[in-house]
Image (cartoon, rainbow, N blue to C red):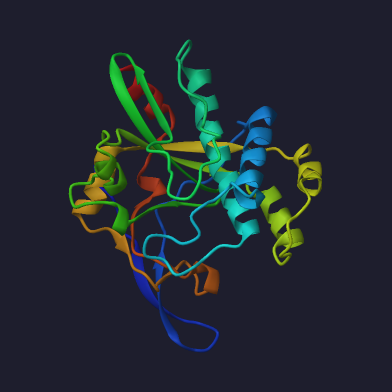
Length: 269
């Protein structure tokens, strides 16, 4: 397999200062007629709301080597989209492999420092599968994994510390983001806890289309071995402040990934 590197160019921002900008060029257009079932949308919403606003809920506010912290609303949006992606994977696998037994996404509200080892952990066809899911907006085209979390042999460091098995597969899920954009316009600058009914009233009209791309773990190891890294303080695509990178990340472009059905074929082998 051949993974393509991003281009790194110098671009002047609105202050006429030169910035380093990475350009993603190996893209896949988002085109999907597959919709996440409403019951999974509702479960994802309830979980995200509890993680962001309940007393017992907690989500990591700062990345391993990052400098950006998130307010409650940002935590809600990120968690909601992430859990939508996990439910999309669950739905996709169940619909494409008859009779397969896999666990539903974990909806346990854990305290600080308690994290899932994998997004999906199950046995099928006599083989153990430890699957990681990364979810992004429908126009996203870049998987990023923080360099601080991975060793030189492509092993996830938190799992090594827990003495659990390695990842076997990764999935890159893209979810239609239009409702999240609407929520952000309405609530982004509101600091107080938001009434859940004001969120939930918007859910019934939302349709979350999704697509899935498959990343064999060998691709992750290849990216690490070849030092495919986007650097902290550089930018992605534009010099907008929101596009500044707050940590070093390994990356794989969407155009280098396999289609979702390749996961189904891999599971059946």
